[in-house]
Image (cartoon, rainbow, N blue to C red; front, side, top):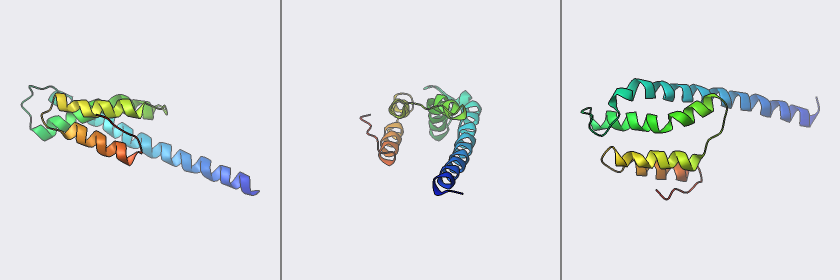
Length: 111
């Protein structure tokens, strides 16, 4: 086997593993969004942590669906949705998470 062919086959194999892993996590997030949907809204009487989790899953469910379908999405738009959680759930968790994830991903978030 020639070197370029071996590298290409390895990269193809590695990409298929990564896609499978990404789809698994994306499916889990989408399911979490469905399970937590009763806890959405600013006037829900669930605990703040449950409401935050519900809104976080809801904010990113379209991005999870895109990953399930092997499609790309706009990371900046996703981060803006995460930051907007603060408009519904009191606190600064949405902005904090968006800023932290933007830093981890090498993007900027002006949130």
